[in-house]
Image (cartoon, rainbow, N blue to C red; front, side, top):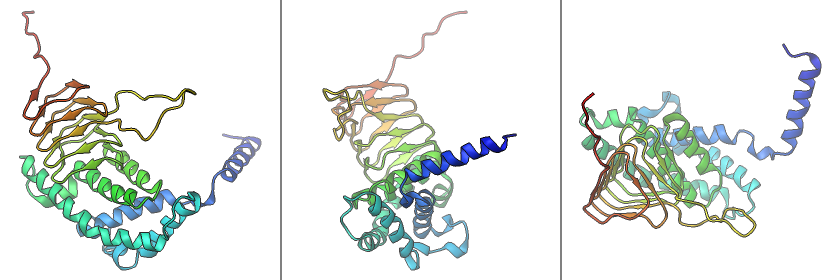
Length: 276
């Protein structure tokens, strides 16, 4: 058990740290996560944790959205647009987000023989939840709101084990099967009707540095995936100049740092069989 002096030291340290952080951050993480859940519930009401929360962001939650955006604006001076306007744009964008998510749910239902219904996909599949959070975060990122999109994407990461950067551009009919360990980097682009399995990485090959040793940011670092591509479990595809052509199939555990033409199947050598 800590003595009185240890407790006092911890309390003083916490107070000193809090003075180094803007009060605008207080509550931002929890309120942002709740916002993302409420938007998902507005699009798919049976996702709501309770009936009382239904339609909150559309009916009376715009004030909460505005408050979240005001927190971001107060910390980051480059947020020029009025938070009320940004909140309105988000609410107006919800139908377009849902329209794409409907295609993702359809792709999962059609692509997984174990799926008994689209409702099952929407309510239970971690891949669908991660994609839903990504599409919300990506839309907010397009409004030039900082930090909020990353909070949403990391919330999905914690809940599902699927790590999708909000900057990634993903087309409709996207299906992540199983999903654990999937990583999709910031500058990745993914076409339509793409299916990926667990532990797939769409990542960066290396990070160029400036003369002072710091990383050079805002460069294209992650691959481009074409339409109708399947990427099986454990595959790793790296590099900003790497392009996977339409209708390609990337086999399990493949490691790629170069482009693949359309219609090509890439596999690793099969296991060697020997007598014991």
